[in-house]
Image (cartoon, rainbow, N blue to C red; front, side, top):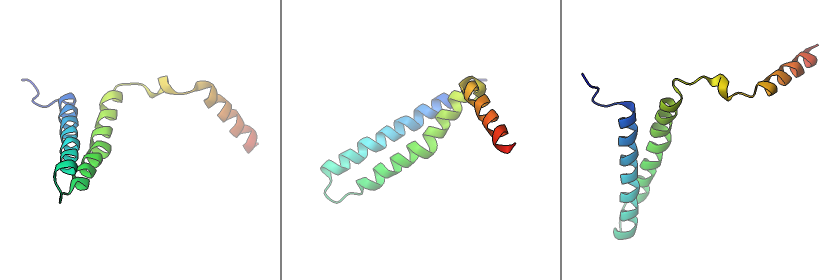
Length: 87
């Protein structure tokens, strides 16, 4: 049986909801004299920062090795510096 909502589709859905919130906020700002466009756009920013960004980072890096992205030379120098300092 096929998964209904994969992580990739969820990220795309949240992205398009976020884009829609921004467009709707800009529409309210330009065409509605008494509107709460700041709240709509603020909710879009919160959705982007606290929901979409962590999901995207988790999705992209869940099966990767963190050792591939470390500075091995810097790590060794830092360890030697700590040993000299503690001696």
